[in-house]
Length: 224
Image 1 (cartoon, rainbow, N blue to C red):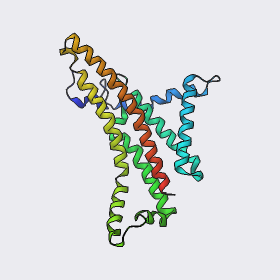
Image 2 (image 1 turned 180 degrees about the vertical axis):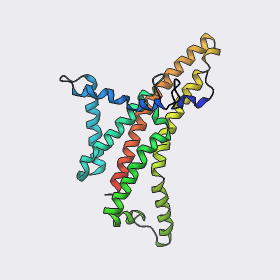
Image 3 (image 1 turned 90 degrees about the vertical axis):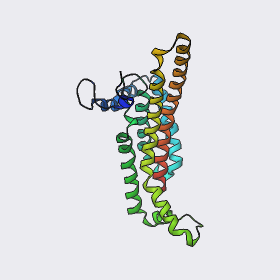
Image 4 (image 1 turned 90 degrees about the horizontal axis):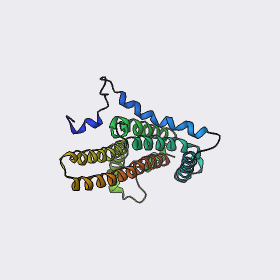
């Protein structure tokens, strides 16, 4: 029996009072050996196609001079999608539903882009604060608005991912908790709705990973 609705997101283990559940973040590493088989499996072929499609899209966003940088964003997508997907299985901790995890991914990336941009492309970064065609009287306000929107970017990335993953898990938990008190007819409807919600959560897990990686790529393309 849960003492708290949010206890499913508690990182501490039930056996000993240590945050061992964070180790589930590295479960995706178990899939890496499949990529080195002499005869590639269907999983390897599918994952290679996904990586190639992501490389082409990220290369288009970054431009021809930064094609080699796509490996960072493909790796970021892989880490998030593995954590999101594995979190849908019972008794596997979803680390991407915590701001500690999502901020640890978005904040260092954003800081790196900002430092690189302001050190190497200072004039471009200043010009980016004032959109082209802005009236002179509105320029101070535009600088303030653009600065604030730039500062909150890592926070919006982190909150978007964590909130979407947490909301879906809470919905599944709330609806599943009513099962013991239902009759057979309503229980059948509940199971069917749970399956639909699980399919929706599977789609959300992939979409949010893709959105996180694409927005990070867009942020990187703006500093060069």
